[in-house]
Image (cartoon, rainbow, N blue to C red):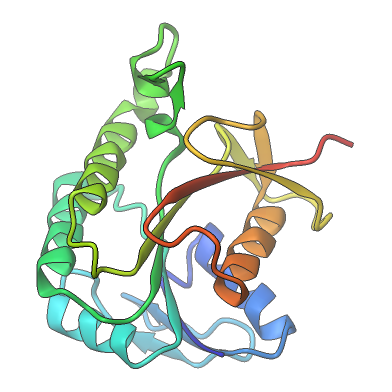
Length: 201
């Protein structure tokens, strides 16, 4: 497959790029710096450039948007809204945040004890998810959320998949990447959100 990764230099984007290359896919690594990742040639692209983003999505088999937007959450929400309005025809997966997952209908970010330092990101990606849920049924999107804790670890290839509620406390970056590339190869969550946790050792 021909895969585009937006945010390819980040923790998730670089792991997905490495995983996809290992499986023999062709990867376009996109970031503001344009740095190359492994054998994927880097290209400069700002996610706020909606026309370029839409064109990239439409000219690849599947794309991943792994941009946390921590320097400006309002801008990342606006960029996703602009992308939705531009109506790309290609398939793409968005990496969201765990804070917008739900327990008994209540988002994690609204539960007592949710860390305040993560609230801005959780609120932003809650809005992003709501925007995709309200999008035209013609838009071929998927949103994937990690477990509440995600960090580099072991590539076990053993992971648990859930829908709107956490299915574990932790996912390794490597297992998260395995799950994302599995979804790229065999789409099972079109126009849906899913979440991933590593299987406990």
